[in-house]
Each structure stands twice: as structure tokens, then as C-alpha cells.
Image (tube, rainbow over all chains, first blue to last red; front, side, top):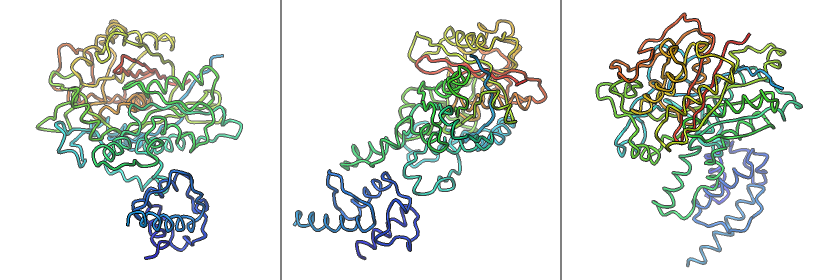
Length: 82
Length: 412
């Protein structure tokens, strides 16, 4: 399952959103997620992908934003481990 | 400028009723909402008795997106608040919003959120805590969610005065309207503290009722010789308070007028109840209502069923009411709904208002062996119907010595 697919599955589970609405460029705000819901979601993302988000703020507006951050952190942090 | 304040909407979510009519019907029938606690930690408790809301499924009331940001005690407040607002058919114009507010009481707010966080960090050694923990757990979350839901732009205040929290919240909301600071207030309380850690803390204090071996639902026995303590409960109650002129103008159904309120502090002991302080609160409230003891036709007592508490309250009623103390029916409905802590004053004041409306008095159940030191008319075991009630009182006496008394009367 790709990163994007995993994120989409998690969103369906956590927020009961419709899978067909979760296109990569879908805006989180338009899906009904405010900044707090996003913080909550990113907490679960850390668990799912075994990554740690950096302390500095990252701009997250769309589903693709989440996927990009996850892929970057997975590659950086796995490198650090190995 | 002193204005009159009326009650135009009621909402409640409790262990003995999930709306006001269900609550009052069950109380009149003497049904208990107390029983064995259903929780995964129940085996670890020495006392496994509580008044839980049965069959509660948050998803029946809130979407999943909303739920991640709304704690159990805020959920209860929103459910009770929605009932009250609908019941009042309350509609607020844009210009009225800054003069509409909310006052709620709670003791432990989002207790389960904090506890889960501590378990994660201290026990499971997980280095992080849920990111919304602060916003879920803070004591003023429930009131704030009500303010958000109905765009109330006036006061948004949470009172935390232990068992008197929501009685004080209602009383202070009444004053806001009476003194002209607001026209409409949502007032009440919410509590959801039936967690492992909180239950353990109460066990340690040795004030919880022991389980009645024959009938666990009868474990809370106010004013009885065989009483052994209080039963913790959860839930919420919210009332719509309104400037009487506004309510009359819009043709609202008026349950009752809040005739008086006041409070006092024992200033004598952090936990031991004190009849002198309680008497002061009762007399202060009567003075505020410009009423005499004989004007009060029913008292919903604090009546926690602790050994000391019931005796002190009995003394206080005698000191404040004189001879009339023996003639006024007084009951403790905590025998059925348990002690809802920060929500209890609001639930009980609502019960008193419903008694006034129905001309019916709910009983004190489990009172089969009277205590000679508790010798008032506690309406033992069987409720009374067709009694003419013109004014009722609700007592709330808290740990910390904070006492509050509310009086409601028929509106005319």
C-alpha cells in the first residue's frame, strides 16, 4: 500500500470521511478538518509510519502535503537508524 | 435595576434519565440508577458501586471529527444543553448574543483525558501525550463548547466548588440576569469522573458507600441508620435562564422563577460539614427571595448519605426553619441518581423545579431504618403526588466548606 493510500485509509477510519473525496489535492479544511483535527491526525501518523515530526511547524493544507512530509521523514529517519 | 429571572428550558443526561421527564418519572417511581460499575478496571476497585450512564454511545450524538476534540464531560454538557435550548425554543438574534452567556460547574472536568495521558507517560513510558489533551481536559471545556455551539458571546464562566459547583453556576447566572449583565444564560454542570484513578482517590477518602450485598442498587441510603456513604455518579444538567420580561414577551413556557440564591463558607474545616455555615446559606437565600421558612414547600437536600453530612444538614434545616423544619418534606434524590459532583447541584435543582411543576415530591429511597439523629420528613421510599407546591429549595454543601442554596417558585 502506498503512503497516500495508507493516509487515505486512516482518514476514513479516524474521521469517517468518504474515500472518494480524499484526492491528493483535497484541502483538509474543505473536508471539515480544522487545525486541531490535523494535529490529532498527525499524532496517529507518527505511530503508523514510525516517524517523529520535527518540533518546528510544518505547513499542511492538503492530503498530498501529509504524504510528502511522511515520505521525506521516513527516508530521513530510516537513514538515521541504519 | 433588579429584574426577575425565569427558567424556560431544561436538559439533563443522567444515570436515571436521559431527559427531564424520564428523570422525574424514574425518581417518582423510586428507580435507582446505581449499580455495579461497568469498566475494565472494576476488578481493581475495592468499592465497585457507581451511578453510570448506561448505554451511552457517543457516536449517536457526535460525528467522529467532532468527537476527537470533545471530552466525555463536554459531550454530556452539549447533550443536556441541546435539550434545554430546544425545550426553551430559544432563538437569539445577532444583537442579543453579547448578552447571552454560559455558567457551568464541574469538579474534575476532563478527568479521563488527563488520566489516560498520565498512564501513557508514567506507566507505559510513552514519551508523548495526545496533542489535544489540554483542550480536552481543561475544566472550562464544557462551558466553552456550549458557548461555541450557540454563539453565546457574553460571560463564559466555569465554577469549581466541589459538590456545590453547579448550584453556584446557576446562582451566579441568575445574578447576571437579575443585575442586568445578561438577558439569557445557559447554566448547569457536567461531570465524568468515573475513572480508575479518581475512583481510587475517593476510596482512599473512605466516604464512598459500601455495596449493599443484597441489592447493589440500594447502596446509597441517605438519612438511614445503615447508611455508609455516597455513590459517585456522572452526567450533566443544563437550564435556560431568562429575563422574565423577555420570556413573557416571546410567549415562552415558563417552568418557574428563580426566587433566591446565596452561598456561604463554613470557614471551619476542609471536609467536615458544618451546620452553622449551611444555616447561613439557607437564611441568606431566603432573605434574597424575601421569603419566610414556611413559604418553602419542599427541599431537595444535599443528602449525600455520609455519616456526618446527613446529621449536619438535618441540624441546619432545624436551625434555619425552626418549627417548620418538621413540616416541610425534604428528600435526597441522590439515593437514586448518585452524587454527580460538579453536576449534582444542577440535577437536583432541576428535580426541585420539576417537583414544583408536577406538584409531586420524589422520595428518599432505601430509608427503612431511620437514624434517630435524622428526624425530619424525608419522604421515605414512596413519592407523593397531588401536593400543592408553590416554592422549593435545593441545598448544595461542598467539601471545602462552600455552601449554596437555590429557591424556585411558581411564576405569576
